[in-house]
Length: 247
Length: 115
Length: 129
Image (cartoon, rainbow over all chains, first blue to last red; front, side):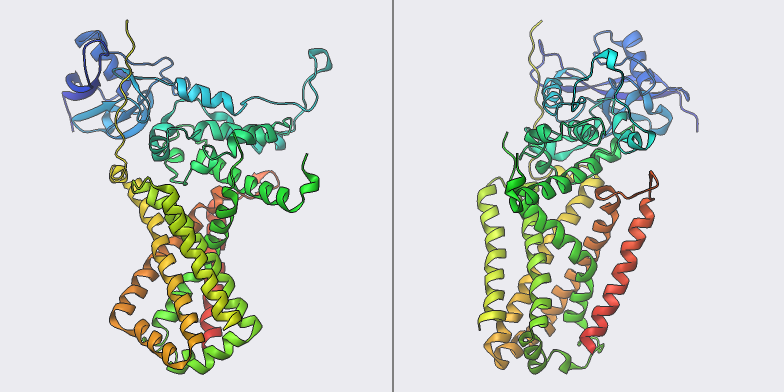
């Protein structure tokens, strides 16, 4: 099958001119080696310089080029043009306000991410002179998959509960909370529970599992959240049955 | 933010979901089709036999515990499903779902332990 | 430059039609309606049993009627789908590590089906005893 050109239908929105977003169609050359991001770059360089979108590394590491392509949230640098038909529909990530064209506002996510304390809370703070916090490979293996998150927000775009319940802390932030809870060097779990085990935390998740299906880094946030639900439920009943142990 | 009390209903949801995954297909088959497909003789579910089962303490437990867990599992999931279908009166839905499960539980206690 | 972010509306009651994975999810969630209704049917049966032979026989007749059979068949289908979906996600909710390595999900799911089979045979046997 040989194709000369492909039509890109790209969602456009200029906050200074448009009352609402609309689709514009651009004809770009078909190239077997191009990812969709290359085709979008072609539009920017040759057809419409006003087209606005985020990208940086072009190798699925930076997490900035997440878009919804033919209805599916993907990294546009990680998705080949040849895997689509003659028309490719490109939209900004779902469940975020559209700043301009394919750029979304992620302030809300950044705030949620910070709220789960995504850093090591050590039992005793060490100075640089006192050395590292030692960890064995086996202790690392317990949480390693959850460290792979690049904050690309495909999971927030895929998760229907994020859209239906805007307060929901969401997949990536909860997976990262789980990552630090599982870390042998960390004692911050109880402090994280205030957000994680609240109603807008894990309990807004209904285990659709879409987050894990679209994750380009196989982080599996859905698994992290279910494990957190089980651990928090055990906590809840332990506190209830043995109130004298509560601090 | 306050820690949620959802572990109570979620704990029942998870326990009932696990138990029903293992046993409910067999239970529904036995009740619905055991006799009509000729798998059992009709007196397997006769009044005398069921009455004897319901009178036995172990029989009471086998009838009560799984039904209790499964109805609370279903009630909690049904509440979430109502929200997924766009029904936003969550308080009312929760009252209806958990209320039905509670009424069912009380009816079962009445039938097995009081009547 | 003025900022005026556009918020796209969410389809509150029809969002799940947008993707096959959402439809599969809703099918899984709807199993609860059948599990709920059938547990209520069992409870009604127990109450009828406590009320005496006449009431109980009327209950049995309803279960064996055409509509009762259709209801049982639908519930059986949804109950099996519930089992399938529940077992499918257990490796995520309860991963097992042995010697630092994760045990393959297929082994955990397979073990669940094995127990399911044994439990079903025991139930079928005990009821007929």
